[in-house]
Image (tube, helix red, strand yellow):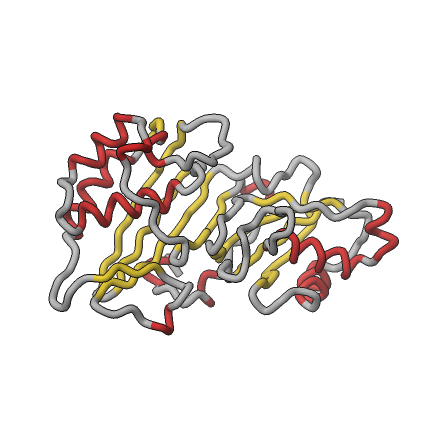
Length: 276
C-alpha cells in the first residue's frame, strides 16, 4: 500500500532533503524512522524509499512538506503519526498520515507549491530568529522601498524562462516555470515574501529575494527585474540570499486525493502571511 505523510521540519541541522553520501539529510532521518517503526522483516521485503513534493536545500525549512512511500505494513492513520514520530529527532515531525491510491505521487501529482521567505531588517539581528529567518542589515531609521519591490514583482507573474534565477547545479529539465502570485508583507522590522507557482528551480526563490532586496534598497530600479528575466543569464544576477528564512509552506493536489492541509497555525509566522 502507499502511504502519504505531512511533515514539518527545521532544516538548519540538515544538508537539505535529499540523501547524500556522508551527509545528514531530512530524507535519511525520515527513512530511518519509518524503517524502525515497520521493523526489519517488513523492510527486508520492501525497503522504505520516500518521494517528496519539494527537495528543499540545506538550511531550508518546511511547514507543509508532503512525501509518500510504499509498504506492506498496515497501520491506523494515527499509528503512523505516533509511531514514526517516536523515532524522529525533535527537528522533524509527522503531522498526518493517510493511505493513498497507487497513482498518487507526492512530487508529480502536485500542481502548486507555496514558499514563504521571512526576513528581519534592521541595525542588529535578533538571536531569537537565528536560522529561522534571513537578515538584512540596515542603519537605524532606514527601511526598504516596498512599493518598488511590489512593482518589480509584476513581471515575474506567469510562465517564463527563469534561467537568470537558476543555480548552476539545478537538475530541472527545463527553466520554464509558472509563478501564480507574489505577495509582500511588511511590518517593521519584519518582511515576508509569499510566492506561489507550479514548480521552482534550484535556488530560484532565494535568488528572487536577492533581486527584491537590491531594488528595495534603491540599488536598482524596479524595471531591472524584467531586464534580468529577459536576459536569461544568471551571470548578471544578484547574489543568492541566505537559506535561513525560506519555508516550503504548502503543496496543492487535486481534490480527488484528499490530501490534508498543512498545520500552519502552529507556525511562528503571522496568520496574515500563512493565511491561517
